[in-house]
Image (cartoon, rainbow, N blue to C red; front, side):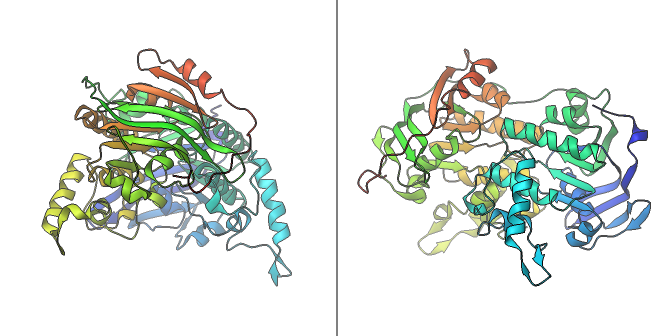
Length: 522
């Protein structure tokens, strides 16, 4: 519930804030107030300057000009540790965890609990981690390696890491992007507790219904300039969209009607055991026609991503068969599957989709270098021309293709991943949560590209937990739950109620997996 401003004193402000990077102005004369004991929602298209502004508050970046004021005093944070000493914590959109360390070790990294300052008190860290997980209503083992966790569980660990710091100001950058609906509800309860205790929260999200539900105040950024700032009273989705992109309605993909071609891909009886003796995927079969967009809807843990891992060749030890254009798929490994015309846009772009230290150009062409190579010679001119064409085609906001891909906003990084897959000229494109971390404008652009590609004959399988997305974009929808297909709908007969009901089916206790012999494993 929104409360009057007098109950929410300003704890931190930016005055006349400008941040300049080589070739671009990320923030221009920004004036921002962060109110304590309230949720301050921040919204804008990718590249609007949201993450830059939060990085300045969190000590990651410093203003080129302007002032940062905390509790009435001008401050300058020279590092994240400096900001943390002033009570500021941040949960980044791109997870910052050590996959080879345990959950407890990640939560207390650089702030270890010690016995008399001599050695690390691992028992104490485990105990505090269990308490944090209980608060977040999860039972993640403190000793589990973070690299073995799903993306949604890693997001929970990242949130727990910030809660462990007892921050007075907490910045949440896309905190629900990898969470299931149930986990989002848990997070909102935690936010309510923090708000009631006087913590000032900055909440960044592209899910507008969330912003309206959780926010007390809203600030909208467009091209580094604040275009709207007020309490949430009277704010609705058209107001947000109008201030974000100057339009009063969502612009999801317009229909491009076209006939489907023959079957281009088929999966038969795919089953994938997991390390716990159960199954991630259970006897899944489906087909895909050329020019068709097949949506796979389900909640986190339904087996959707694991199915795509089997198809692209990343997952080993599964049973079942795949067919491309009627021919059995025998190629092993990711490279072999790409060569047979299958492309994948992974859920976790930072870990699986990009090499952060390489340039935008090098990332885009990483999977298709052979297209620019004759013998031992590579045509850098042709590579550069192709990259420029994809930057225009996908409307990637870049100052130069030679800049590191890590300099781009999350949404623009996602467009680079999509471009990389398309450069391999796939016949079948697998897309795992393609709009994760993408704003409404970029989402519309990506969806229009998907429709255009489908009209040109590309078969697309895309995984999503967003009902609006799957219903607006899919020609046909498969629902998965607990590793099984629990529903299949044509576009005309699909309803939100039917999809949700199907996604709730199949939640039965796991049964042990049958042993997979070397001959049976694909």
